[in-house]
Amino acid sequence: MFHRSSNKPVKLGLQFAVVLSTWALMVTSVPGQSKPELKNPDKNATLTGRILAEVGYTTGYLRGALGDRFEVFVFAVERATGDVPVTPVKVMFKFYPSESPLPTSFFNYSFRYELQLTREPSCDETVQSLSYEKNADETGKALPPAKVLRFLDGAPKDVLKPDAVLACYVLRPGNYRISTHSEGAAPS
Image 1 (tube, rainbow, N blue to C red):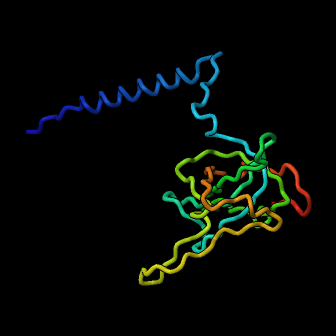
Image 2: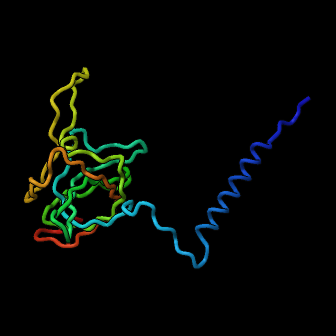
Image 3: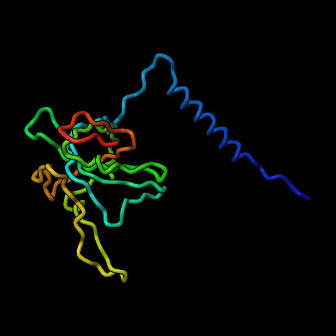
């Protein structure tokens, strides 16, 4: 004859999940209560500046594990105060196969952009490391690295020091706009 196995562990797990999700909804939707502040205020940031350089990988786009793709560029964040007029950062434009990459016209130093970014410390990188891509032949033998960092026309080249570590941010489609431009047409 057959005997029933106990479902107690499954039922307890489901009950715990329901209680936990109910508690989470109550905490986040209490009327009249403001949302909690981010623990890391730099996690989401709106930065204004110009694109200094693009990183043109020889293998095309960087590819993520979930089918996402990345275009990489160096952005000069403009500072209103202080001794340093700009702070360079690394920006990874993340898009999916169903989304379009950045238009070629986006990479224009004369455009001043406002970018809505998410800070991603795991991809911080030195200028030296970002500038070159490792190469190998078909047998796996190492070849000289290829220079992939390309400065835009008109961009100052003395802003990037090889040993400087660039803070990394992620940009998503639609999270940028031109705030001003000196000449030329706006990217579409």
